[in-house]
Image 1: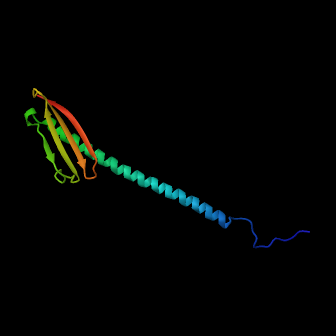
Image 2: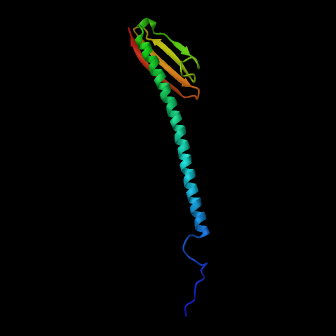
Image 3: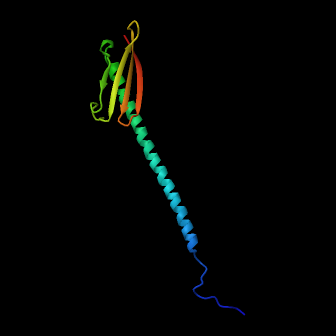
Length: 125
């Protein structure tokens, strides 16, 4: 003899436990992706700071190399004095060798976040 199943006892679909577990797994996945995105954005900002420091240092080296040997001199540009880059300072250190035939030109650029890049070149008579 067959018994009839009640209509309300449909076994198709998901149980409440399955829905809660799957929702939790999706939430954990989304939080993980969000954390990775935040870390990537922070790294991108750090990288941009280092790149700007390097470009400002290289530009100053090129300016020093365009000068005559006797015009090449040390200088300091404080925060807010570099046009379009108020969050950066630049220090140029010129060190001549013993017989004054070569000068080592070092440019150190620092941003307000504390990142620093140093580039150098040699200028001869």
